[in-house]
Each structure stands twice: as structure tokens, then as C-alpha cells.
Length: 355
Image 1 (cartoon, one colour):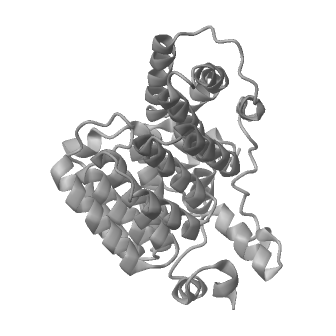
Image 2: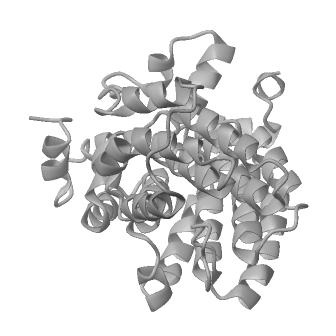
């Protein structure tokens, strides 16, 4: 009955009940708490901080106001200038400079809306950047809205619509709506799209299937992505998906984490990173992946491994650890070790979990 009400498989619920799989995404915790008719704090455990306790960072309200504007303001920036600004925003995001991106986005959204008729691709990209950074900052509902706007702005352009669907999948997964994310991303793979976009959709679908507890479907989608990546090689990424062979290998690790197969995830992780392809991924991508691996270490009871991985993520992209709610949750768990792993005590003080 619980599985039916959650829209998840019975094996997923069974793994949660047996402690094989952790409830470590706050939207999922809220969903389970609602179905069980208990306070979400009862599932988080006494003393565990809410991952949203820090509140939205400065500037999110300005993005919300920009998304709420339906008027098209007088355009002052040219298409060429706005293209440069969009490119700068993407690079700033991929370097995990989230505070800077948040400041850029309201003006960027206004400029791209003013050019929509002449350059719809710029508006799609602006909405996708907006969605991505909002999901990072724990504002997944608002991120979903921005991703949906990206789909609408794409109109009849199949490539733009497919790239926007990648963002929709990410936002839905962040909300714990894995079944919806699976439906959206697999439907979007039927559109004609470049390999980088098609592959990114397959990866999002695979992770969503894993979130639903469907290991077979997840494996099938990952294998399709692997076959596509073998011919793509990670070249040409105008849609900023970071798709390629190494992204597929990292997706295998994260899918194992989502399925509760933490031991397999840890073993595969140690073989997946360290090469040139890994170091060539954006800092944002690598640090986000390392936080997922830290969750795997927690699931196998290796607090030192989890702490070491979070500290490594902080070295790659400090904002990924210091701004994201999931990082706070992982750090709070690791900090329970006595003594806390090297570097963890410093990080917990930096982000305000301890004094």
C-alpha cells in the first residue's frame, strides 16, 4: 500500500525498510512523511538539520520576480551581446560560481525574452541555466518552472525542446518525482537531437529509473547511452550537457547509489575517476558527482570515506558543498564520527553546522 501511494516499486520500499537504501533526498523524505502522516523530522532523526534550514541565498527572490514578469521590456542589448552574456553565464555556472550566476540571471532573462522572436535559442538557454542553478540551491520547484518555460520557449524546434527536456528531468528528479522524470526524458529521446543531447536524456532517464527502483530499465538506458557515447567521444557540446564516455561511467555509479547498491557504487567509483576525461569535466559536474559518492560511502558505513569525498568535492568546487542542501545533510552525518574525519570539522564550521 505504501509503495502504491508513493508511486514506487515494492522492492524500493523493502530496501528502505531494511536499511539497504537511504532516504537522503529531502523531497523524497517529505513525500514519504506525507503518505505516512508524520512530521518529516521524525524521518530525519533527532538533531539532524533540515537541508533547507539555511534559507534561500541572496538573489533567488530576484530570479523569482524575473520569472513572474510576463511583460517584454524594451530591449537594449543586441543578440550578439546577449549571446556573449549567455555563454558567460554557462561558464560561470560550470565553474560553480553560483552566487555570481544568481546575480546575472534576472537581467539575462529579461534580455533573452526581449529577443525571443529573433533568437529563441537564447531564451531556452537562459531558462535552462536558471533551472540548473535553482535546483542546485534547493529551489527545485522554481527550477521546474524555469525548465518548463524552456520547453515552451523551444516551440517547434526539436533540438531545443530536447535540450530543455534534460533540464525538466533534472528538476523532477530533484523533487523526487522520478517516475515523471523517466516519462519526460524517455519521450524526449524520440525527438531528433544531437548525440550530446540524446545521451544526456538517456542518462537522466537511467537515473530516474534507478530512483524508481527499476534496475533493469536503468541498466538498459545506461547501455544505450554508452553505445551513443562510444561514437560521440565527448566532443562538441554546444548544449552544455557534458555527455561522453566518462559521464556514462559516472551515471553507472550514481544509478547504483539510487538503487541502494552502495558497495557496487563505491567499487565502480574508484575505477571511474582520475583520468584526463574526468578532469576535463566542469567543476560543477565533478563536485556534484562526488557528493553522490559521499552518499554511497555513508550507506556502507564508511564515514571517513564519505568525509574524504566531501572534502575533495569542496576542493573542486567550494560552492557545490557550501550552497547545496544535500551537502549539508551529508556533512551532518559525517560529523557524527568521533573524531570527525580530517577537514570535515573545518567544513562544518564554515557552513554553519557547528561553531
